[in-house]
Length: 181
Image (cartoon, rainbow, N blue to C red):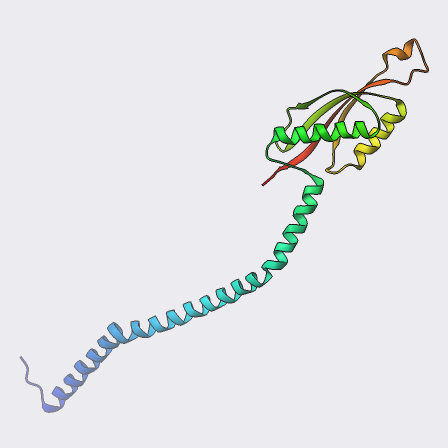
């Protein structure tokens, strides 16, 4: 071991002391200070999230009114039913009612299989020429909206009697539907 002069020993002691201070700073103080700054940035993020959520909560009544308005609009445009079969029944009844409004005679009606989200129905009826025009106009006015896919018109007695105004009409219709809640 080398003996150091008094000045060298002091310098060595100061170097060791500075090394210990740097180690203490590196091991304890710096992580503690970094923890404070991390928590401060996390706190500012939480405050921003809180303010954003508070603004969203404040807009809930307005959003609720808008959702209710859109729901009413949607239910006026589409059939609301628990399943496709019920939607088909509602569509069939709607077509039958339209035939009855124009004073036509419903002969037969049935629900048809349709694509997903669509109800289909067909109605066979006996009506006159003017009633056919009135029926198509009535179907066009109805809500929820109805798509007339096909109209078959048969006038069997017209060959023998050209003044006969009775038509056998078969109307196939479809309409979009949404699942009722």
